[in-house]
Image 1 (tube, helix red, strand yellow):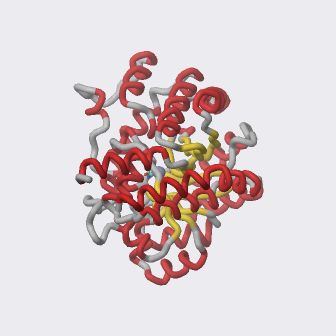
Image 2: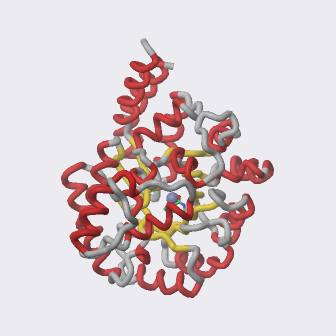
Length: 350
Ligand code: HPA
Ligand code: ZN
């Protein structure tokens, strides 16, 4: 088989593979055409661009976050939240995702009551479940650029909208100058309230931020975590703990110094080689010109994942999703045969 045909065959198999997405931002999933349409409808000014694609052009985390905030400010009515949620889940389902735990930046929609945001998002989740057989749950992200007092007020407003579909909290936005420790109290309160905990760490910040989210915030998973490779003792510790790192290949091209996914020292490759528990996710897919199926293809074709590594990654998402044991067991038995069949077909292409 030619290389092109093998790539096409791999891409089709990886798209069909049953998957769970554990690192996806609602606002980062807005298609550029949708952002422009909502901005026009709501009279919001976006950065100037000649074409929808040009809106999503940046090279660093802070430049990306400026566009992320601008498009989030275009989402105002409950119907707008329904639309972006429905479109996000439609795309995830089209890429083989059957369950998604997604982040949302409720504070980025300036002056939009949380009740209205939750109403639209929940309606989008319900309609996507009906139309695409995809389940989903919400993980509000705390903006680390804000103060701990603002984070406490954010958590108050989140808890006022509590439901079974609101399962955890995260920590995101510009990492490097904002260590996790100031958020210890708000994380402790979220935990007492029964929420699961995760945080972006070691993406643009140093390895001690990963130690901080583990030891001070008490997270169950780590989002990104690439700079763990600066600290061999921490690698050893996390390997023994089996803590899951939600890795996002294309994001690294924008938010880290690693601009070549096929480089032998790319941190996701090194994390896999070091035996860390990692999974593949799409983060902000249209904003980083990708989708979930393509991220799995990047893992195999750029980052050196074998068919077995891909299968291990999918099972890691099943084991680490924030669902009860019976759901986990059901997924294993319902999806298992398909995962095995696709893994074998991928191995035959290697
Ligand atoms: N890093 C930090 N904050 C974010 C990201 C990210 O990759 N995506 C959306 N918000
Ligand atoms: Zn992220």
